[in-house]
Amino acid sequence: MVKCLSRERGWKADTVLKHPDFVRDVVVDDRGGWVITGCRDEEVRVWNRATGELHHTFSGHSEEVTGLLLLGQIVVSVSIDATIRKWSLKPDELRKATIEAEEARKGLTEEKREPVKKSLMTAEEESELAELMDDSE
Image (cartoon, rainbow, N blue to C red):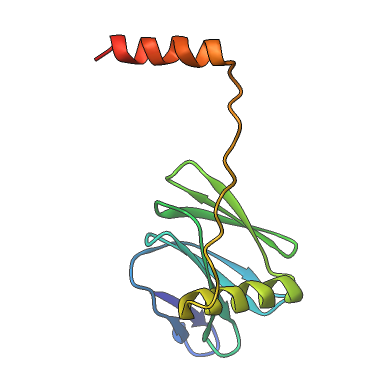
């Protein structure tokens, strides 16, 4: 849970952002009016600062998010899964991400498949590696 405390209210919470797990980091985008949170549940959430409503959830990490950085209209997230991801807060791109997430949630879009990558090794190197892998068992 994230609480936004107000000095004018004697340090009482004026906004509460509920999360399913511990929040590891928070950044505020004053220009866009967003509060962005990184959580142990592997998600990066974008909240409307004025209303406290969840606007969008970015998914992509496979372990908990441990840090966030705001660079202009880009949020950079760091995770225990040893990845760094970037998410756009630009209005058009955020709108597109929100629509795509909603369509995926409703099952309206096909899952994108990664193209099969060509090996960087020659056939001979692949064969040698396969032999080495068999020898190690």
